Length: 206
Image (cartoon, rainbow, N blue to C red):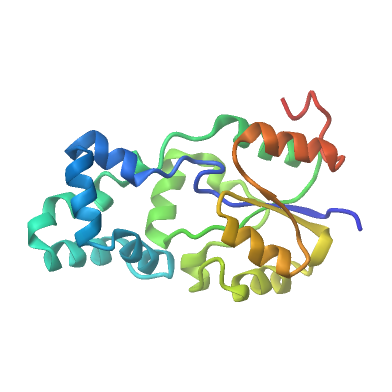
């Protein structure tokens, strides 16, 4: 079956997403470890990814844990520093596919407010042929429903889709639906896969 769309995750595929690295640089590794043991910040962030308001959700968590209030607020106030930098080679691959009129979709766990903010820094986030953003969909990967919603909206399924993501559980969920997949561990490997699938030439994927 011919591939009819390429589906990109965003965090750690098109943009680096490393909150722990950010906090280590600001408050030190030991204090960061203590905070993450006391506060489920990734769980708080998942609420945002499910469509809860960005500012209100993070600030409410900060008030719930006053010992970590300032640090938790950084998840909002300095969020763009956690979601950086762009992975330039991956962005070039996205644009190269589109130059060949290969549709490119996003499929991402991302909040509504945080995505809109990120798009002001990274204009390519506004350039997908189709956007599938969990905050708007109110479901997150690896829930099977988010993959089905993409299929239903696009009319594509199975091996007509190829999907890359940095998380093995998200890849496994796509494989269960028969999608072609690539576990992203760096843009070079993804570039090689796109060449192997005949979607790009080696020079286009450079």
